[in-house]
Length: 337
Ligand SMILES: NC(=O)c1ccc[n+]([C@@H]2O[C@H](COP(=O)([O-])OP(=O)(O)OC[C@H]3O[C@@H](n4cnc5c(N)ncnc54)[C@H](OP(=O)(O)O)[C@@H]3O)[C@@H](O)[C@H]2O)c1
Image (cartoon, rainbow, N blue to C red; front, side):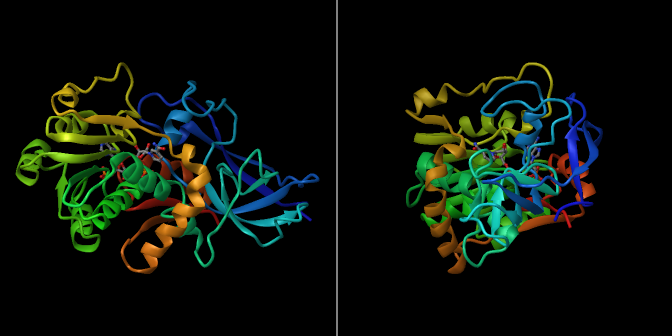
């Protein structure tokens, strides 16, 4: 049934040196594979762009194996089962999974775990706020950040997929939330639409001075998506028993050479504070329950979400580069059709 159709792909062509480039990925075409016994064939409709993809293009193991030159670029996606040899996954089932930068992907459900879309949601929602980044915000903020009524919470990367949801969850828990983002439009969106109490534009404002003004009692929870100077500025201003959640460090992902350490880490001692990292996949067994709770918040109008959706499969390399220059508000996706 899949004869004569082409599986468009982007494969790793070169290991990035410094800032990732479009030419680090190469377009390729392959035949559409046929599912073996116990397999399904998924046709992707949306492909997710995630900062962690930059690290996977390097030849180093972190929490997943590095890609090899010539491999299909790893990426999360949403799609439809279009051929099935499995009784539990009928043709037409909508699923998310790590399908890679390609139109078609085989899965037996174990090699590439499949998540069905929660009932009544579209691909953008399934991949974004109810997908990996929404889950990261949920578990990172609630399990590690432990926001409490009246706490002052600061979120960096605040207008991105993870940060925008993490900040709103802290608002729901009765916190004062300050977002840090990279444009006036993003800062306006955080305050006017998402209900953040204030926002700092780190590209035009002095982050330290603004934090002093906005957090006179110190920061109880800092949800860090960026690392670098902003992490240091926040560490200098933590309150007693603060929780510093290390979610990501995008400011270092495209740099070469040694990464400077946080200078102000010793405040963790003076303030009896905790700094902790996490990887969201460790919470995978709880994703369905968390997505159910998140969906109730969305349906009740308590959480808002947005996505920047770029059209066309061939836009994928450019979209990956643009992720690092802040093209997106909310989740960044490419619609493949
Ligand atoms: N621990 C985990 O399990 C886990 C899971 C998912 C994601 N993450 C991490 O969470 C963070 C956010 O990921 P996401 O998928 O939600 O991406 P995202 O925030 O939607 O997109 C990335 C944003 O980062 C900002 N940015 C880019 N370069 C920057 C720099 N040098 N300094 C400060 N900000 C910069 C840009 O916004 P501006 O316009 O504001 O600069 C850009 O829009 C990343 O660090 C990612 O690695 C961690």
